[in-house]
Image 1 (cartoon, rainbow, N blue to C red):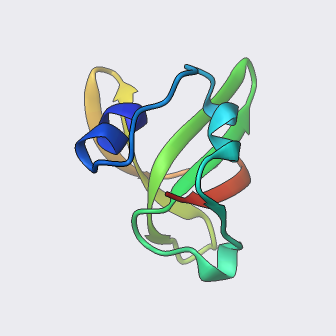
Image 2 (spheres, rainbow, N blue to C red):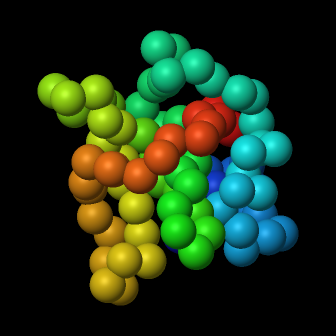
Amino acid sequence: FISYCKQLGGVGGHKSASSKSFLGDGTKVSPSDAQPGDLCIFSRGGGGHIGIFVGWSKNGKPIIIGGNQSNKVSIKTSRQNLIGIRRV
């Protein structure tokens, strides 16, 4: 899903299906500098997850747009371990 969005945005796709491989894309961003549209990369059991940053929840968790969950796009607060934010 994220690779497809990158292609639509004119910044190219991605060669790996691994979410953690996105840690090498674009520019590293600190959580305090995160802006809507940045990529949030998460670690979770069995692999990882990636989403498009929307904002922060009241309890300090990232709110993201994600795809590939139940064949739909969703906006949700992530409870997974945030391991990086990238601006592409």
